[in-house]
Image 1 (cartoon, rainbow, N blue to C red):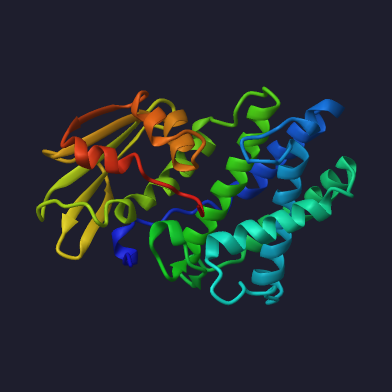
Image 2 (cartoon, rainbow, N blue to C red; image 1 turned 180 degrees about the vertical axis):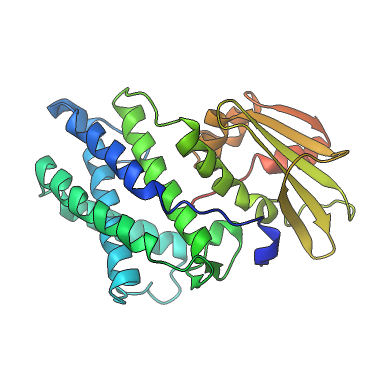
Length: 278
């Protein structure tokens, strides 16, 4: 597995939860009756279903982190991704009896509770694993960042499905990409490269940033900043990168939208990055 020291410096997104929720509630308040039935990129889920899933995320997080209540565990031998997909689908199916008004009212209540809960957390305390970063145990700062990206991604899915503008200003997109790229050391874990080799990822646009992964004896270490002489590089705009990391587009589709240089084998490995439970 990956060591915490390999995934880069900490970030603090706790102040963004309330602002993301405010934007979501404004978005939902402006939807027409037909918008709620629009299909989303999530197979079989409408806008209403995705919204219900966000409520599920709120309730499970409050139950576990605030109240110390853990729900039923995975069945024996059930992989995490399969367990997650199963319980999410069970909730969404049950929530179809709720009205859209009820969903908005409940999200208003739980959103404030979730934002307040995160503000009280110690960023360095141990939290749940972030599997897509290859970590068995993660600190609160990374757990919070991962959770924020999930909320943001689901809001983007609603915006895409209803042809609304994305919430893609740098205030939101920069920390999302900053978090997603923590999957890079895990993505490159099995890549063959000499010790000292560096792979650079450059994000262009409003959320511009540069990250470099350096091959060490125990794996790859991620840092902010440009490499002196990278052996491989990937340059992508922010929209392409977040969709790639959430499987909103395939690696093949992303390949046509990015610029790569150097060792194409390593560059193509970068495009296999997934920053969600998959």
